[in-house]
Image (cartoon, rainbow, N blue to C red):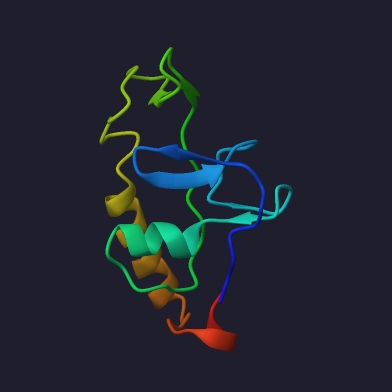
Length: 105
């Protein structure tokens, strides 16, 4: 199974991203939050492309908000479940298989 590396992460509207680049999968940070994000949103793990957060920054309370709408719960910018559903469908269409162990990520 994959592991989320010790790289610092941030939570943006319930999804995890690397702190440095706001990517769900980041080679530069050795970070992979796909398994945790899939599980949080009720999906089984699957090999899929990682999400990338839109332009966002922490507000005064340290909660990330989208720059476009200045909202911490913006479903337009932070609609992770919808984005995960699309990413999973694309992965399945491309022939990637879900599973665990050696077939995972």
